[in-house]
Length: 156
Image (cartoon, rainbow, N blue to C red; front, side, top):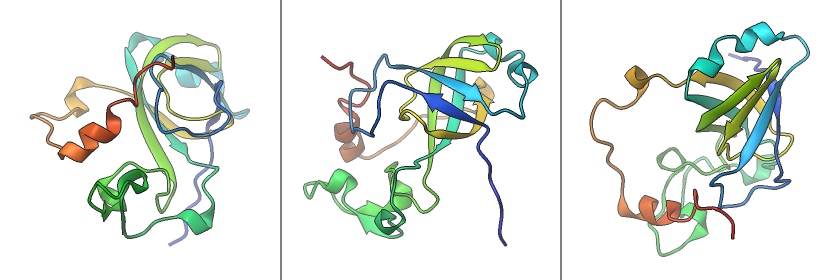
């Protein structure tokens, strides 16, 4: 089955290339594609957060991982399957981040802490609703806490 997915917008960000850490406080703007009107964002400013689905467009097809690897290639962490980590070298190169809504201006959505680089194609935007968040405590391995230690820190 062949399915086509099209970008609904593009990210305008100060980062030109992916980096592993220090995404805290970063602001970005998502501008909707030409075929959309401002009505597509109508009511979104009433939500505190959105989930943004995007394409890791700079990942070379030869770098895609379909098995296990050491997260961030750190040999001190056990190799885990690509679906047990959030690395960018995923089979479909799809990223997902929950961001704070700053404001909506026409066809532009301004968000905080979107870990996508300038020019990133946006695949979808969804409002975050408490009812879709985990209904029980989130469990994760220690290496993932270590990996994320500086991820949402601010650049010095």
